[in-house]
Image (cartoon, rainbow, N blue to C red; front, side, top):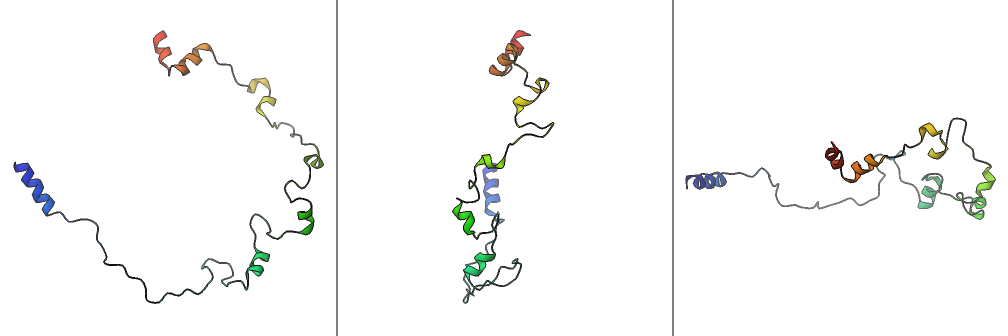
Length: 127
């Protein structure tokens, strides 16, 4: 009985840690005019979207040259054969299977496979 009275007293004297600032209000006048981003390199807006697009870069120039578009684009515009043979330099390999046998994967023993399948319990059972 005494414990519940103490808990009630603690709850009654508890003050929340969060403080509310009051009712939210919006500003009476908001400036909606366009302006350059503070981190923009030039600090000024472009004259038009066309002017911006002519200078913009996104993984390369955004403008397309006529010769590239007529060839089917930059990627896939030429067949891979036109690049010539692709061979690894001496000491370099494209695939793990091309490495010397000493770098190959070792075969699993039956005991290792049993240990993996049983989560290690087979190792304890045999001991």
